[in-house]
Image (cartoon, rainbow, N blue to C red; front, side, top):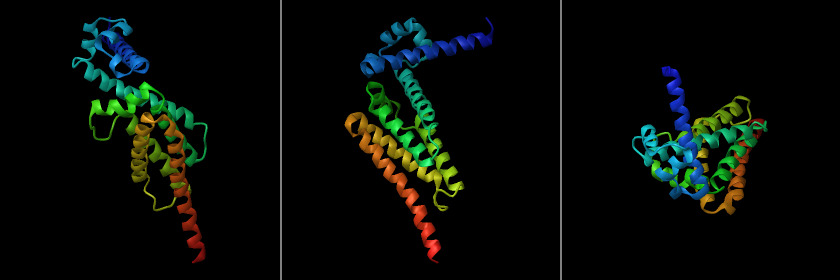
Length: 207
């Protein structure tokens, strides 16, 4: 077997282990994801699990957390493709995160228990970084088109919005009935950004 083939096989095996980990969390919560149950679901030996994750369950859960973040980001990108207006696209990013977070054990893992296990990481995990970059790009493009105030700072706004979404996701994970309320609140914030632009235009017109 060539080196490239071995690397592909190793990558596939690692993916299988992480898929098994997330499946167990989704089915039975974080407590269901033991080394034994993960190995059984992935169809591998315990030694194989440790070969891919030498630090054991904690390392595996950190990797699973990042995988969940990438899953969320992929889902959001697919959903926002149906919208043209920047505020509708950002609202859909918000709706996707909040619904994902409030959607059961996997959402609670991503929003609540996962960050506690992973701990603080500068820049956040894959989902947080991806969300911040995506929202920043939407805002920058809107400003370039003149649809957002010229003095708006897309990067700073993206940090504020993505951080707010994480907090909303945590709250929605604990109280799923609050999810739609948070989506409406995000839309109010986005409408405020648009209103700021229109107000600025009106002020220029009166000069």
